[in-house]
Picture (cartoon, rainbow, N blue to C red):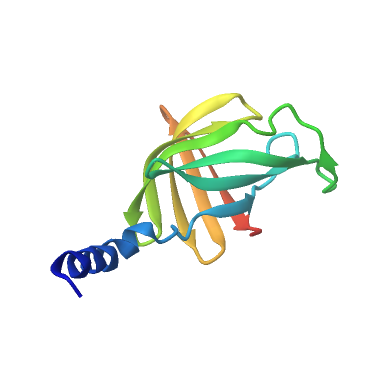
Length: 130
């Protein structure tokens, strides 16, 4: 094997962990909001940070509903801190139409999401559905 090929192979092996999918990526079921509705939020990589989009909405009985919020960004600029912790992002709460500074923590298939604006804070536990 030529030197340049060996160097390329070594570079790939070193970079492989950087290409690995973040364990938080996937779709989560939110807890019911102030109106009793909940949703499925897809978390994905967006240029090195974690973003989330509302993919489905459900009423309090679990029936899927048509909502103007489907396709809207709910979470953005979240950065991995290590050990399942994420911070530095923002989260939008559709039921109150407010945006909060946010952090989250992944433990197995449960994602604890919290956000604060001034001294007002909210928190939910989301469950991974896929």
